[in-house]
Length: 611
Image (tube, rainbow, N blue to C red; front, side):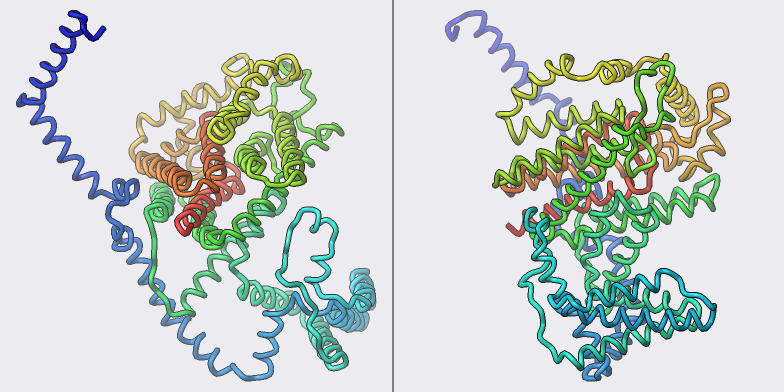
């Protein structure tokens, strides 16, 4: 072949053409143009966010200077007075006692807490009888709990360490569990006094609740760095406003700690800048809205969850916290899955979100702790790859069995959502995860896909094959909405119409096909274009590019973290695929989870950098 005249002739022609092209005026002009735009890109925000050639770019940006100015003002208004009060209060009995409780609450014997609860119940019971003439059952229960607890001598840490379930799951809540030895009589007297004082507050309406919230605030503020853990783990089970409250609490505490310390320096990278950019996109979506008041309320929630990214990143940048939070989150997802399976088995699933004539054999679609089966499916798109990554890296047989059961439960519950977009998303994301992290399983997975028609119920196959079938009312409904939104975007694509359903419904009906109404475009990308226009979709694209840049950096830096990095990338990929078929941000908790996942990736990148 090497001596072939034809091959030699072709090679000579090719090299001659290349040489001629490189020496031509056209090529020189084109190269200069490309170099010019390349220099512009390198100096731009996007270039620095993607490539980070100038490490001081983020630190010298307007956003960081603005945050530094706010922190300096907070230090003057809040930080200095707090430090002054703290210096003056140090050494007092109340200050030292309260500090001791905050630092050692987990090591104090349960019997002292029980004594305080007993006194609180007795005093509150007596005051209610005197003021209202009756005694509520709750006071009997509280007082009885105080009596029973007075016989428990170990501390909270010892009780938690001795629990069978915690030992079985190898979950260590406290380091060095112990019980602090104190003077019994004086400690009981102090506990009874605190409980009696708190019970006496019953005489003033709502004073108990106010003081309880104040104490909880102080306790959480002292250990406020753990608030993201509770938000992440309990997100599927608590109301949106509770998640929002924890997020705001965590951000406020983080801000106050920063102000109290007097450290107003801000270190921020390209990822943090893109997230801050999403805040300004929401502000723009309010200013430009057709329904400003409603958009402002939605944007306030959105911005709170976006800023929660920073609290999550700060908390999870410690390896021990990171893996404990991830494992507890997987356990939480397993609970959601089990609840959904129970719904299906006992006929509690909903038929609201399906074409009952076309899919009459489907008994219903499960929602579990969410309000919508598609929302539940979107939740599992982010949790299932994480579960698989921990399964791949698990060291013990017990851990592998537990994670395998968790994976099976989540997958089964995802099937019961009958969400076609989520099914497509999970198939693609799982294929990527296994191909990159467990190549030995890829062949087995491929064979399993071909075996699915023989083991999967016919209802699932029919549902999956109906993708794109416009005789299905839900599919036809989406297509009509997309067409109407496309007609609207011809007029509004540059700036959008504002955030929220009210802004959408103020404009969309003028472009809708027939009488088709909708609260949103049922497509994440059309939503971004319709709400915040070109700036919104562009910044979202930049955020996702930086997200994947960070996951790639994690995989290169640390082989031990590679599986989790790939799982986060794969899960987000499946989530974005589902975004083609639905508005995945419609549910506030999923919106919060999206930015939590961004914070987790940023934290994992920080851990990889430290390693």
